[in-house]
Amino acid sequence: MALNRIWSLRADAGWVDLVRMQATDAGRSNAGRYIRDLVWLLSSEPEFRAVVIRKLQGVQYGQP
Image (cartoon, rainbow, N blue to C red; front, side, top):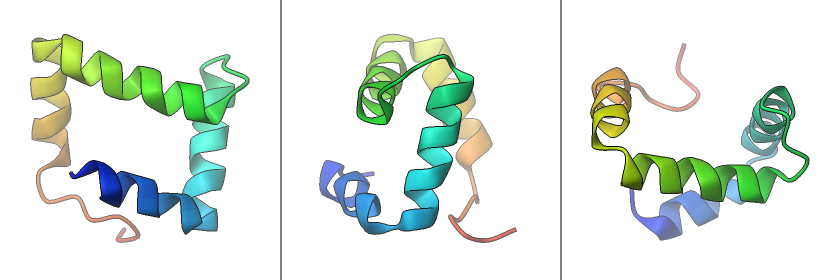
């Protein structure tokens, strides 16, 4: 996903709440830093990235 698309998701209140909840669950106090570190982890760990990409196949945001 292009960075500008990720950036655009900031306007979605539901997405923002979900990210804040996940950051809190991970023990992080800053949701922005949580996302930055998550993206960094995906870029630096090829095996983790491969699992995430497989899991994302066919997933559409907002769809059950």
